[in-house]
Image (cartoon, rainbow, N blue to C red):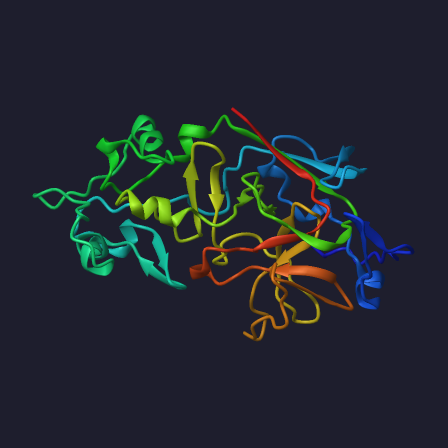
Length: 315
């Protein structure tokens, strides 16, 4: 599907928290509205509709209401944890550390104590079977901020089927509004892919590792937690992409502020340059937009530069 090229002109600068930000000419002349046709409609629970909704700055604006159960359909979800220390990488997912991505195979699990230089790690039993959270109860006991003792030293795996009835509703501003001050990411996500799956803030790796647990992502950069269900912490090229005619990196989704999120590398393999602290920059075609971080960075984008909509999860 082609990305909309409608051009919006910002006549007045946008004032936030008492200070007025002045966008550049490129931003004023090329701000892209959200294009609902980019989403895979079959993945959504209802037709996208336009509604009025309050943004983070307190103003009401036209927003697209997008309702999903955050289940990927165009790629498999999982696997995450291998079952035995002799399992190959096809039986497990991936993990990231210091910017690098590692296959979570049986060898990685059996050597994790040496990997983290900590002898307290022991994710497997004497027969070589790996201690995996197989039930919803176990998943939730291990996914708490304070991991239950019985689930420490486990590979944490929550199944999408545990939370298939979760309903996630997004309110994304139709016309993104650039702010002079960025906002931090909260627990309510940062945006969504075109398949309706949530892009999440960085995974709490310090808390996970402190309990001697591991919560791998699948090869598509996603895993499951009790709050958001299936969601992504990394962009690995599995989801729908909207190609750009000029060879720019493909578009992969929208942030909660309505600005587009694009892959990190363009169609020639060149990495996006000149990114700000949030992971965004601007050009004369797309205006301001974001680029996803490296898969090993545990950071899709770092903050938001627009007035953000909202994400609600109902169980």
